[in-house]
Amino acid sequence: MDLDLYNKQLLRLAASIPRVGRLAAPDASATAHSRLCGSRITIDVKLDGDVITDYAHELKACVIGQAVAAVVAKVVVGLTIDEVDEGAGILRAILRDKTLPPPGPWIELEPLLPVADVRSRHGSASLPFQALQRAIADR
Image: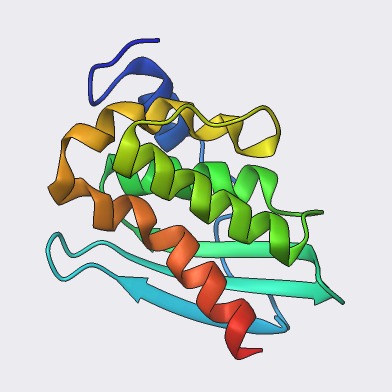
């Protein structure tokens, strides 16, 4: 694992963000932004019970925020609300303790390990989960 902050894996994620745009008729939407760096994400989500059935987002963020947004967009459809909360917890553990993510959909967050050493970037990294969890809670 390359522990450089802007490692190749992180840059690849940021360069390949899926599900960009807005949903026509979302069940919920939310926006999160970082005052520190100006990053902003707006997400739309469709749910069937507690399962995410569709997801889209618009973002203006640094490479770190883009990388997390790419992971969320890549894996979130088909997951339950509890699995989304688990992903947010995994990201917090990565940022707080540099904990390797467990096997499963959130293993994709592994390139974020070096971000643990740069506290000023934690807020931007957390924005996609903040917006998603806010949308789910407000639906």
